Image (cartoon, rainbow over all chains, first blue to last red):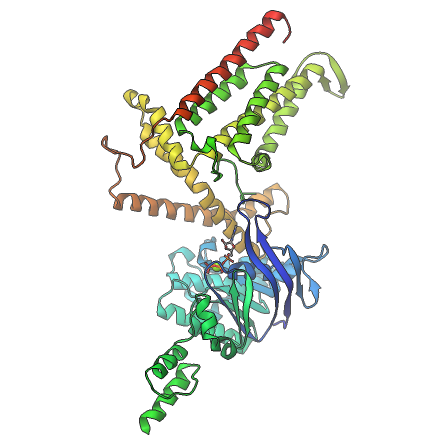
Length: 283
Length: 272
Ligand SMILES: Nc1ncnc2c1ncn2[C@@H]1O[C@H](COP(=O)(O)OP(=O)(O)OP(=O)(O)O)[C@@H](O)[C@H]1O
Ligand SMILES: [Mg+2]
C-alpha cells in the first residue's frame, strides 16, 4: 500500500469555454488529500462535485492551477499519467455500467492489466479485490451482467481496488442501492480505510454518511463554500440550508427538540443524542 | 473522438432562420443541394457562397462552431480530394514515379472539396436551426404524399427524429464510459490499428448495452402513453406557414433560377 498525498493548487475548470454552452465546473479549489484519511464532498446538484473528482484523477486537466501527486505536477509533459491513475482510484457514479468482460474476474483484471502487471499478478490482485468487496469465489467465473445490482456495483468497485490505489475516490457510491447494499458499501469503505490505510474521498447526498468523514468539503457553484471537520462544518446550519443542504439527523433532531423546549446539549450523532435523551429521561 | 459531436445537433438561438417553418428549411436544403450539382463555374460558386454566407449570418450560428462540426469528415474529404488530383487526365504539371498531377486534376479536386464542404455545411445548417421535433414534423408533412404509395412516412420521420435526439445522449454516455475506463488505466489513443480496435471493446460493449436499455425504456414509455400511429393523431403545434415562410420560398426559387440561368448564360457566352 502506497501512502500518498494529492494536492490541488488553485485549480479551476470550465466546460466548453468560449461557446454558448460555457459552464463553470470548479473555481479556485485549494485542497489536499492524504492516505489514511477520509473526506466527504457535499453540495447541491450541479455544484461541481463530479468535476472535482475528475480533476483529482487527471481525467480533466485544469484550465488554471496545478494538481500535484507527492509534489509532482501530474500535467507536466514528462509525467506518466498512469502513475496518477494507479495512485488515485476513481469510481464513477453507477460504475456497474462500465462492466464489459465475460467473467467477473476478467473484468476486475482490466485495471491491473492496463498498468502493466503480469497475468498472474493481475489474477492475484483481482482475487484480493473481490474478496475485499465480499464477492464469493463461486461468482468469479460468472457473467457480471447476471449479478444483482448491488453485486455488480461491488464488482465494479473491485475493478478499481485491484489497481491498489493509495486514495480511493467515489462518486455517490451508494446511489440507487437498497439499504442493505448501501450498508455493505459503506462498511467496505470503512474496512479499506482501517485495514488498508487507504484514503477515502466520497461524494454523498446523505449528510449522515458524510458526517463520518474526517474532513467535509462543501461545494457551491464550483467554489469551496466550507471546509473542515464534520463537527465544524455541520455547525453552520443556516449557511448549509442556504446552499440547499441539510445536517445529520441527530443535529436536526436536537434543534427540533430544543425548539420544543427540551434542554439538550449540542449532539452531533445518534449516539450522543441518545445518551443526552437518556440522561433527561432518567432525571 | 465521439465526444463533442456538434454535427447534426440543434444550436439554440433566436433568429429568422430558426423561426422558419421546418418545411421551408427542408425545401431550402433540397434547393441548395440541387444548386450545388447544377453549378460548375467559378463565378457560380462565388454567388452560391455569398448567398449561403448571408443565410449563416442571419441564422446567428457562429461560423467557427459550424466549421468545427466539419472535423469528423476531414479524413473522407482529404481522401477524395487526393484521389481526384491523381486520377484526372490532362495537362501534366508535375510527375514522379507512377503519379502525375494535372492542372485539370487540381481544379477538379478544388471544386470537389468546395462542393463537399458546402453540402455538409448546408445540411448541418438545417439541423443547427431546427429542433429534432420540428424537423420530424416537417419531414412527415413534406413527404406526406408518399403515404399514398404505402411508404410509412410517419415511421421514418419518427425514427429520424429519435435518432437525432439520441446523438447527444449517447455521445454523453460514451464520454462517461471512456472516462470510467481511462480511470482504470485504459488508453484509447495508443498502439497500432489492431490494438486500437481491440481497445474499443471496453467502450463499445457498455455503450451498446446502454443503448439497448434506453431503446427499451423509450419503447415502454411510448407504449405507456398509448402512442400509436393511427390516422387521427393530431399535433399540439400544427405547422402553419407565415408570411416569412412564403417570402423564403420566393427567395429560394429566385436563387435556384439565378444559378441555373447563369449556367446556361455562361455556356452560351462560351466561358465555363
Ligand atoms: N460534460 C459536461 N459538459 C458540459 N457541462 C458539464 C459537463 N459535466 C458537467 N457540466 C456542468 O458543470 C457543472 C458541475 O457539474 P458536476 O457534474 O460537477 O456537478 P455535481 O455536483 O456532480 O452534480 P450532481 O450532484 O447532480 O452529480 C454543472 O453546471 C454541469 O451542468
Ligand atoms: Mg455528479
